[in-house]
Amino acid sequence: MSNPFTRYLSDFANVQGITQPKGICADWRHASNLFVADTFRLAPRHRFAFYVKFEMDDHALSAPAFSNKNANEVGMLVKSADMPKVTFDTVTKNQYNRKKVVYTGYNYDPVTIKLHDDADGITNAMWAQYYGYYIADRHTAANSDGNNTAPSPAYSATHYGPHLDIINNYRYGLDNNVTVPFFKSVTIYSMSRGRFLGYTLVNPRIKYWAHGTLDHAAGDHLESTMQLEYESVVYSGGTVTQDTPKGYATLHYDLIPSPLSIAGGGTSTIGGPGGLLAGMETIFGNVASGDIFTLGGLARTVGAGLNMARNSKNIDFGTAIPNAAMQILGNSVFVPSLTKTATTIARPRNFNNDGTNL
Image (tube, rainbow, N blue to C red; front, side, top):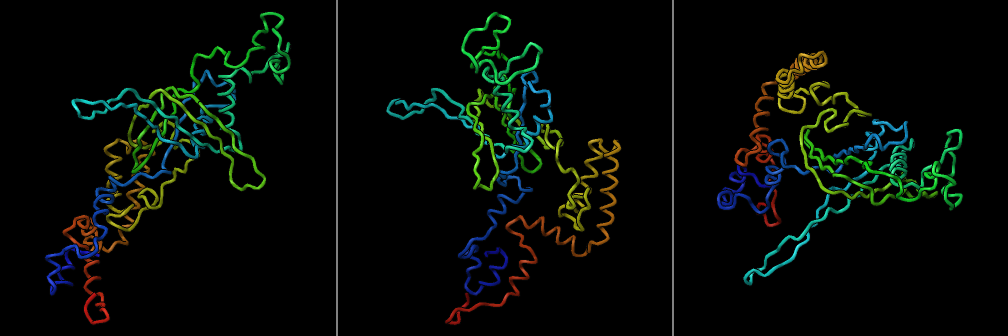
């Protein structure tokens, strides 16, 4: 590994520390400066950190047992989701013998979403309502006492109704008088570092739905697959909190603070996760936001202060402060870590077979 400081010590006799400061093999410093510096600001997002929100029209929901809670649960049961895709139609023109690419149109490519086929049948219930909302074939007819019958008369005879009062019993296909879309929107949220980017599909409609495949020899789980077409995409962004994005962390989430955070216990460090600096940031943040003036906020602030006081007893400030300073300065290519320098100087020399230094 190359080091701007130790290269001068180990290769001074060959003058390579001055003329070849990087040596023959570059180290990780470029990747560290790009992805780690500035609190991982440019680090790539993880594919597994996402959330999907289905906004359904209340008038379209026909099952009384299917509530807004179940609608939020459907988003939590998403197994994988494609991000929106846009394809431009182009044509290449000649502009005084110069090639010029011109847009002639654009299309939003369908998005595929896979969902777990859960034991309670929530995802299947959503599809059953969607199917029954747009397709009249699924409708059941009512007896004279008002109770639904199965199967519908639509499957038993292909004749006209005897009078107009029960003509609705013989509707087929898309003859359903639907004017309000079932989905108001479907939004896919990608999350990283406490922030989210939202991709809202405008007026989405299901183009394709597939139930899973049953197999006695299989040991994996059932899943359902939907493909959505949409009219446009609206982009958004913000800070992740409870119920922001809408519905996030409101159901089935573990809201107990992590032991690495100052609220969950913290660590006996100065600049590390859950350390003194993080604790001070939490306390001052609660004061600045006014959260300290609520009962829950006051309890969280007092708890953070008690954890800081307990953890500070186990900190050796004589070494912790220099280490914290060097950790901050270590992002610079000109200031090496003292630990790395000491290790490099103390490392025994290695020799080739002819006795020259490696």
